[in-house]
Length: 147
Image (cartoon, rainbow, N blue to C red):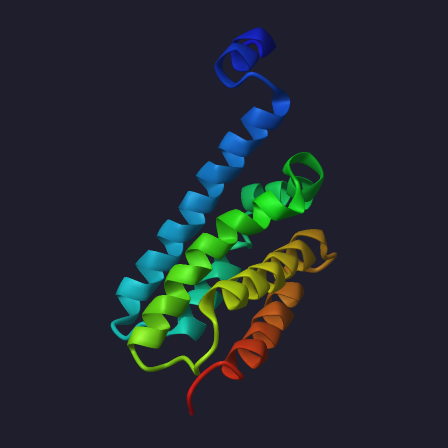
């Protein structure tokens, strides 16, 4: 495909990037849903762990690194916040989540998990960074849960 054909379809490099990013985010959301279904007993922690695991995909890593510079941090967070908002609402309906305003919490978790993705994507040792990100995510999220 030629550059001209791409720009005809998407209008600009930024629009093409947005389309690719959105497609990758939808793929991550699908992975989280599949992990939730396989678990038999979904949890907020399980959703977040599935998200961090999905961030290990090299294609997602590349977009994660370049995304804020190309389409902006706010738009990057908007995509993740929507997915996390759903997980939080479902966790609350299961009686798993402590009382807290969902929208700001979703935004804050989106930022934290996106940063975990960047840490994994830019690490010299991605497997080690992924383990550390998972451990940190567990500790962060466990403070939101009803024990």
